[in-house]
Length: 344
Image (tube, rainbow, N blue to C red; front, side, top):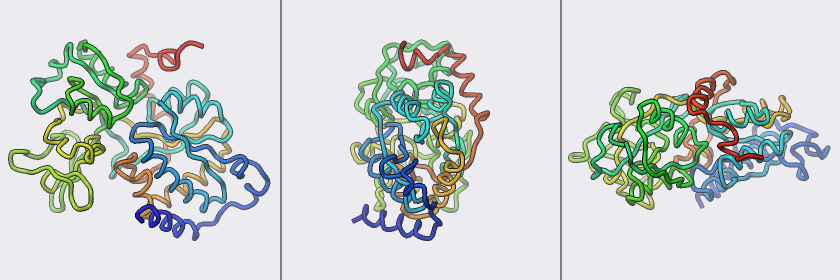
């Protein structure tokens, strides 16, 4: 019933939009025979992405008169490869590091970036079990590290640079496959620490909003109880948890009781909406405008706005030069395309 309502809301939003005419009928890009390919990186549960992506595709189809097909490749690298293989008809929701790789590999162009609860940036967080004896950054020396994917900005790239800069050599590494899997690996004691994305907690009404420099966990578990609210969201007291731990609340409802945040990274540019290098510029803007309008509807929260999906609040235009800091991180690591895609 919830999914049906979301689809109806999406349809209600787009019926008032002025669709493009003639594009589909001509059998060109966006026709039933040549749908626009929409790619999502598999950073959270693939089924959640597929279901939410279909809601988005339906909204975009009604708004633009074009047809879309949703794909969730098996890895970040596979997503980039797929976009490069479809330069004229692909769009992808890819993180900053993935975008830089895709831009360098085949000329993928950024169109917009996510805004999450007013923030144009996010952070990597280092997670450990609450009963762990890891209390400082230096304590990670020789420890087993779990991360989702080697092209994940917050999961791997940024932590790699910070660990290297601090002279910390970890022990074994475990590629978990995604942020939620990394949280569970820490929760289950399969790794000593894990790195995932951090989005700031939502403070209750009457309290100052979280600001960079505040404690990543602004609560006291000896006083405040962690729980899943009637709305299905994860809370500690009146504070809503928005970081990657919230993505496993159904599997591990006591995740906050068992897993703590050791530290945060420096800020990272938010994830992108990017397009294949030969994607028609006029259609890019049509799609960006339609998505911004879609973000103002309730159906958005059943799609990419859901905290179980990517937690985007909306999106805003962005330019390529914003990602120069990410390029610098690749240079510091000495990381090349071959490290991600392999030779040949």
